[in-house]
Image (cartoon, rainbow, N blue to C red; front, side, top):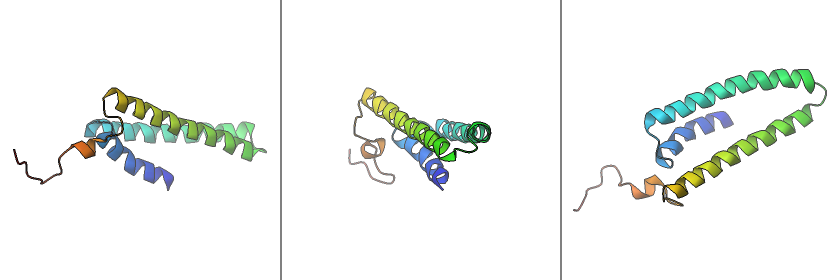
Length: 104
């Protein structure tokens, strides 16, 4: 459920807030899916091998890694927005609405 929410929001966020083109957003989603598939296999095997009797420790460690990953992505996005001079403003706020008439 969380993965579906992230994957449906990720392209929208990368296009509107980060300024990616649609192809770049698709590539980011594809990399996210590939990374998820590989990490499920690797972390599942590691969990079975080293933490079979201590699952709660393993879940805490992987949860902390996930939280740090999301925090670092958010930090990079904020730094990129500040570098582009758009700190606090999204692309959607500055772009004209579709179908709106220009009065110039």
